Length: 138
Image 1 (cartoon, rainbow, N blue to C red):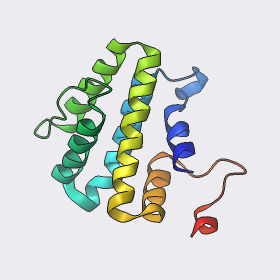
Image 2: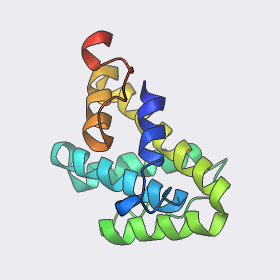
Image 3: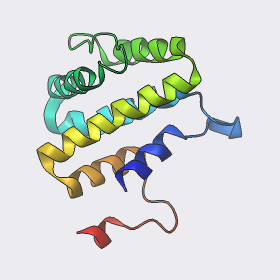
């Protein structure tokens, strides 16, 4: 279920039916939405610390820029978007997916699967048609 939620976040369509979002933009948007959900609970620095850990966990596969714990959120997202855009669409998609999966895995280890799923669904939308709901997995 977690993977389905992440896939939907990365397949977010551009406004006004402009087609598929480019992977760098979709990943940055998904990260921004996740930050919006997390920051009220763990604060800006706590959210940046979680991101820094996820960057560290995926750095052996993807050469990420610094997680920028002191960088303002908009600047941080711009740096990640630019970095992903420079890697090409396929690599940007894989890197964005790996980072979001690492984030979800880290959250599960800290707060458990049900709360993580609620947080991800709140950030990126509810289950698709036919997908199990949170009530069915608890």
